[in-house]
Each structure stands twice: as structure tokens, then as C-alpha cells.
Image 1: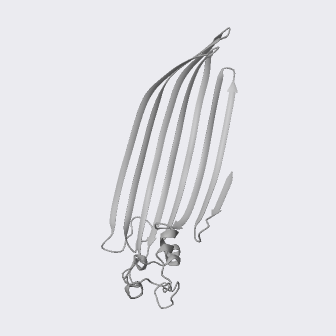
Image 2: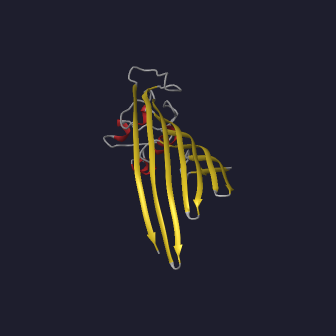
Image 3: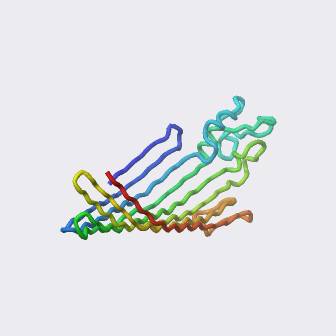
Length: 239
């Protein structure tokens, strides 16, 4: 069991991760079996945007960082203040342009090996990996650049992603030594199946979950990618 926490050098940037792993192996005569399972969950919080440096480069000395008269209490780079410049407020960008990502996952492996005769082994293994990710992005309208009203409605985006992968390896290996000579022959087949599915919604004032959205400009989308690979492999080593 492992817990990891990291606070970024920039405020409002954090990363947490919890891992739980189990590994076992058993031997009985010419038979060997084993498994490993890893469960994990992570959470990251960052500023949603190009990064702190561009915001600092576009900051104006005459623009106050905080302003009690605006909707969220930050100085707004309006056209009256910034003119035609592409201005920004770094504090506003870091505090209000938020991106939170949560991931839940499991990785597993099961294998079995048998030595038929001395030096001749057959091994099969099955690997499994699955991740479920949920990402929420918040982009207040007040931080979209010059001449944007402080009363504009905030914009949100929610993305859910599912990743699954299966990998199967089946090999036969023969090791033989004759005096100073040693031979190793390996042959096998590999099968892999991977799929990635994404569902997203973006719009004004998106509520919790993908089903409830307020606003006529909401955009929905989804997509799926499937990869399937099969391969044969062989190797001969002499030393």
C-alpha cells in the first residue's frame, strides 16, 4: 500500500495517488503459477490554460490583481484598461481556470508455466489493464481576454474516458547445453486488444454529470478507438 502526495510550486496545483499491490507466486514440481494485481486512484488539480508563464508575460502593471467591484473579486483586463493588448490576470487564471482529473484503474497479470522435460518450458500469461478517468475543466468567461464582461456566464467541460487492454502471451522455450555450447530456441504468439472510449460535454453552466446541462449552446460528443494486434515471434540464440 502506497500513498503519494505532491504540491506544485504554483498555488492550487496538487497531485494525490494511492496504490495497492498484491503479488504471489507458487511452485510445485515442474509447475509454476503466479499473479499480480495493482489497484490505484489518483487526483490532479491544475490551472486550465497554457501555463503560468504566458499569463505573467501578458500581465499589466496598471491592472489590479483584486477588485471587489467585479463578479469574482479579481481585476478584469477590459479594453479600457488594456487597450488593444492581449492582457491577462495571472492570479485569476490560476484560481478560476481550473482543471481537475480523477482516475481509477486496475492492472493485473496471471501466468502459468510448466516444464515438460528438462529445458523445455511452456508459458502462458494474460495481462489486463483498465482505467476510468473523469476530467472537469472550468473556464470563466471573465478570463477570455480583452473586453469580456465580468457578468458573463462561466463555461465548463466534462470528459469521461474508459481505457481497457488485454494482452495474452504464449511461448515455448527450449534450452540445451552441450559442453561449451548452449542453444536457446523460443517460439510464441501474442494477442492484444485495446479500446479507448471518450464521452464529453461542454457548454455554459454544466452541472454535475454528463446528463444535466443548462444552456442552449451545449455540445456533446463521443468516440471509440479499437486496436487489435496478433503476432508471431521466434528466436534462436547460440553461445
